[in-house]
Length: 510
Ligand code: AMP
Image (tube, rainbow, N blue to C red; front, side, top):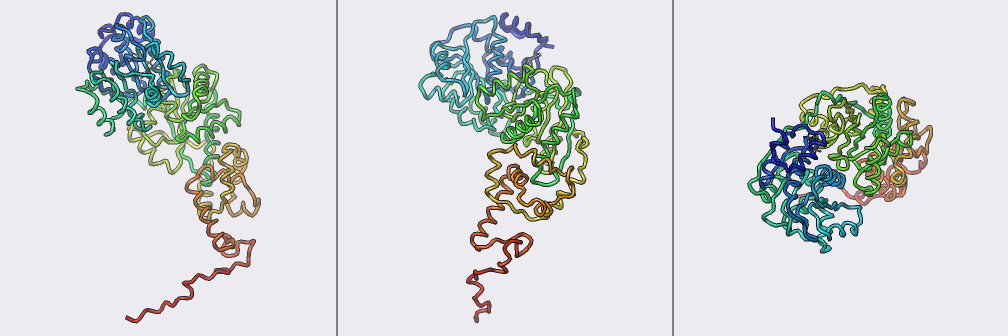
C-alpha cells in the first residue's frame, strides 16, 4: 500500500498531513498526487468523501512552496461551485499549509469586494473562488490571470447543473495555455467530457469507486406515503417528518434534512421551528453571513436540525451527523449518495430515512438502481396509510374549486397554516371529503391556501381558467351542476346565446 512518504510531497506538507492524523493516502490521493507533482494535467473522477480535496491541495502546496506571487496575479486558481465548498477548500489549504508560507484569498459572493481587493492587490499564491465572483473581479480590472500556473476545477458536474460551464470556459480562456489543470467531477456527462477534451492536455485519468452508499454503518429506510388529499400533501408530509424524528428519539443527536426545492427548505425549517424543533434553513438564496452562522452553529452542536438544499450542503464535511432525513426523493439519483454520505462518516453509525410520495416512485427506482440495492420499506409511523389513500381517491374524484385571491395569501406565509391544516389531517377527521368540508365549514381558507402553496402549477391553473369562464359568461356556475347553490338563475347558457346556435347544420348541396 502506498504511504504518504512515498509521494514526494514537501516535508512540511507531510508534517501537516501527519498531524491531521491520516495514516495512508486514499485511492484518489495515491492516483492523483504523483502526476500532479510532475506537472501533468489530472482528470479525477471522484466524489466528495473520497479525500479528493487533499489530492489537489497537497501537490499544489508542494509546488507553490517555491516562488512568490506578484500583485494582482495569483499563481493558482481553484474554482468551486458553491461558497461553502470554496470555504471548505480554503480550510483545507490552511490545515495542510501550516508549515509553508503561502498567501490565499477566497473570492465568494456575499463578502465585500473591498476586503477581497486588498488581498489580491498584495498578491496571492492561491485564489479560491466561485466562477461568478471571480469574473466580477476580473471585469472590474482587479485581477490578472496571466500568471496562473495551476488551475483546479472542483465538482465540475455540479458546475454543469448550476449553469456555470460557460463561465468556466471563459476562465480557461483567460489563463495561460501552459497552465496545469486538475479537474474533478463525480460523473462524466457528455458536456463535461467535451470540456475536458478541449481544455486538458493528455491528462492522467483517475477514477475511484463510488462511495459505498450501502455501507454497513448507515441504516437506510424509506417510508412510502400517500397524502389523504393532494392539497394536504405538504402539511401531512411535515407531520410525518416530525413523527419520524420523534420515533428516532435520543439516537438522533443532530440531522440534516434535505429537500429538493429551496422553497420547501424554508417551509420545512419554519414549520419545524414552530413545533419546537431546533432547526434552521440553508440554501443559496440566503446571505453569506447567515449561511456561515447556520453552518457554524450546526458544526459546533448548537443547532440540531439543518434543513438544506443539495447545492448548499454539497461537500460539507461535518464529522458527526447522526441522521439524514430526505424529505423528498432526490431527482438526481447521485444526490442520494451525496446526501446520505453526510452521516456515518469516519466509521460512525448513521441513519438515513427518506419519505417517498407516489409521484417520486420513479426517482426511488433510479436511486435503488444506482446503489444496486433495495432500500428497506419502513412502516408509516403515523399509521393509517390505507385510510389516507381511500380518502385521497375520494377527494381526487371531486372537481376543484379554488380562487386566485387565496393563492396570493399563501405565498406570503407558507408555513403558518401548518397548524390549521394539521388540525384537519386525515387521522383526526378521516371521513371528511372536499364536499363535506365545503358544507360544514364553508369559508375554510387555510386548507385551500395550503393546497395552493404545495402544488402551485398544476392546481393554480384551474381556478384561473374557471374565473375566466365566469367573467365571460357573467354568472357563476357551481360544481354540483348548473345551479351552483347560490345563483340558481343561470340555467343552460344564461343570457348569452352564441352565434353558432343560430346556424344551420344541414349539409350544403354539392
Ligand atoms: P473530501 O473528499 O476532500 O471532501 O474529504 C473527505 C474527508 O476525508 C475529509 O474530512 C478529510 O479530512 C478526510 N481525509 C482526506 N484525506 C484523508 C486520508 N488520507 N485519510 C483519512 N481521511 C482523509
